[in-house]
Image (cartoon, rainbow, N blue to C red):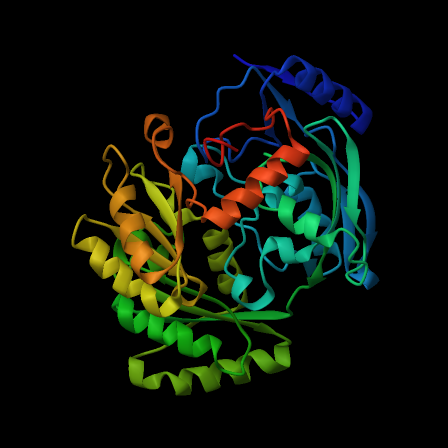
Length: 406
């Protein structure tokens, strides 16, 4: 059992990391620990948690900006935003239950450290695009800050983007400042049933190209659709294709009707009202359609037009269960349990069409022997090594979690 350090302020955190650096003690860095089972297994001596860095220190609803300690629970953030009809527009996904944890425990620092964004990414961008400023402690034990509380203050903004998605391998975040946005007055979701993957991705791609500001698209193959908590949808026994519209109440219904008319040739179009639409996409954020699985799970990003072609090729080698998000550009794939979780075939096929793949769920013995994250091209690998050398020269922060050398 690893000893866990729970610093109460930046000075305590700085001293703890300095001690570890001087003694060459590798540290596991985490917030609430909801994503600890993602990445390569680490050989660490102790761990540091940011759970005591909590609380909202700044919230200006009129300026659409918030600052909070990295260990602040997402539930606390969203409660305050709800009171002002605002939201984290990139709607971070919560993969905890998919890898054996419990949903609803994420911290705001962990969200930005992993840059895991939800379905609305196709409209508003990724988590890192909403990050304005950070405070943290690097692997030398040095306290630093970067960025600001407004978007026009771009001093150090590239560092914010670089640390977002670094999975705790460069620094320990202690505070984050980020944009928030108004929550839409109304939500509607159009549904199609029984579409094959190729037609579904065509419909989703067409939908996001319309002027109606589609904020989410999703296609679940039948096995995944049957895992939904929404009883009526689960019992349909068919693949489900969903298109979300969000806007002012006076706009949504008119836009929904125009979309229904535009896609009438694809079959009957059903619709979820505001309450059911919000519940449905909350499910998707929590990845409910993946929770009952134990097989290896991949998160694959490629061009929307190439997704079905990639999956057709992969299905020639193994049985797969598939869901498409981001108009088909994000693919969730469950594959049979093998010694490499299908990594060789997945990466070989992706090399021919373009894209990258991350292994989200697999046994530790599998994650220890393959590249869990997409292998870096030589130029990016060199840059990543330089960043690691600058911010964590001894290599004590989450060593080997991303790659064997980082």
